[in-house]
Length: 116
Image (spheres, one colour):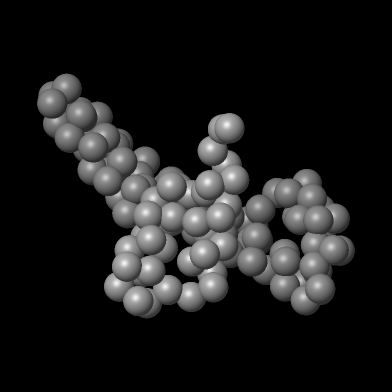
C-alpha cells in the first residue's frame, strides 16, 4: 500500500545519486530529503484545505483564506535572513561585545558581495 505522501521513485533515485557524496552515508541524505519533502507536501495539503474551505463563499472569504494559507506557509517555511541581515546582526553583536569569529566572517562575506 502506498501512502499519499510517498515520494515518487524517480525522486528517491535522484536523492540516492546525490547522497553518494554525503560523508554520513546515503541513508542519512535520503532520510533528510524524504523528511523535508514529506513536510513540504503536508504543508501544501494544509494550505489547500484552508483555501478550499472558502470556495463556496464570497470573494472576500476566499481572499482571507488565501491570506491565512500564505501566513501559515510563511510561518512554517520562513525565508533565511539575507546576507545583509546577517551582517547587521553580527555588527550588533560586535557592538554588544557578544561577537564570535563567525560574525567577522559573515561581515566579510557581505562586504565581498558588494560591487566595487
